[in-house]
Length: 533
Image 1: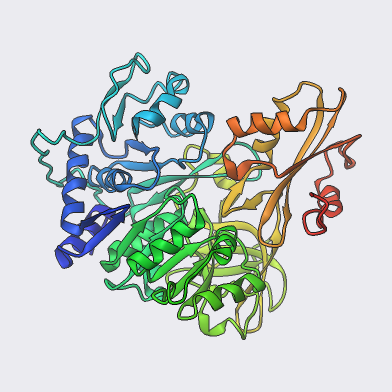
Image 2: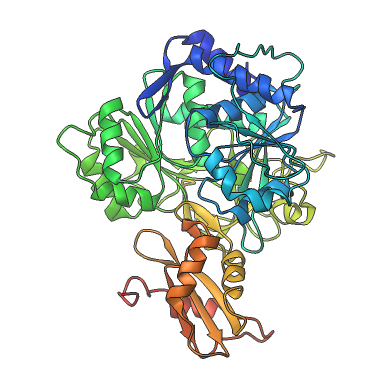
């Protein structure tokens, strides 16, 4: 049995050596070709001094080199840190600094945007480029080298011996996710977390080597990364796609005869509006949704388009990979349900004291089992807030594994099917991402020193949460259009406010803080009533 992601790929290569592992644009790679390139990158990383537990960041869109780096890092015993390619330099800087990244893999164009921030990352010693080596000075402490050997140079030799993870409890990755306050936190995933997760998901999706899985989501998103781990476990093929036009997705599904698609509600809403010629979606046998509830109207539209496909509605959180799914057979019988726990997970609904709730009694969702991650990187206080005692652990056990207390309020019916009620904090869930209101607010405060109060909220728009910001200022009326232009330079697209409203004042609670609950109730129908137009 594989004990790390690299061994998972070796097993796939041994079982399916000539089967297509990856498609990207007009090119494809067999499992044998993929493994050879992963070995080349692993050798490069080892030559640059990457050792066990060293962090290697990859700041690229979905392309072959991104996969080489993730699996090559695992082969060296390192820890890969996938950086969302939509992030701006200041967010990239935070990630590189926060987990002390040693090696960064990126492209020449992306490196040019990072020149200023990399000087503030003293732990980073090497940048590996996917394209031509950049001879320009980036930072005095950095070496800039090619990721792969040139076409006229011999390929590297790499033998994975003791350099790989010694046990499957070794950390494999750090994925950054936002909380309700502050900057994103790094969730530390073990090799076991990822391997068990792949096995669990592949089991209920019935993945096999016949599958062709469309990878639409960022690989910095655990839901997106899962498309690769489940595919390699099953010997399936993966189509890497970053699209600009929704019809590109339609063409990819038809061209590659895609069998599985994973998306979040806003992306599903786009796909539902695309033009699907007769028979173009006939190959799709399953759809999966996570990152937000699927509206029933949207689900019906998708079922009409993908008439041969079974929808799997899922719930997950980065801290525990995946928690629940609703079997397609239960869609009509349990509308609105999150389903039950996936294989190798146990989901509890508990009161504040850890006692179990009764049927239909609201409580906090707690996830226990081997999918629970290793906590947040270098953040003991934040880890203690989310990773707490396991309510099911017998009192006699002295060293207990923590459970994830999600912060989500849910209830379970008499049959154990779960239903989402709401969040206990003000975190915004949009486009499948968790967005910190504080991070958006800090970016807006920097726009104008006359700002007195700023509050960012997630407001339902019929499909997803959209970001609404309300501000109070002591100065003259601000230039909102100018603000939004500036925000596009400092925040990624998924963190952009859809609307910014200027008020005379913001409501306060007894402690003098902004009363977010009152604001949320006042504006809960803002995007549904057309007030934003």
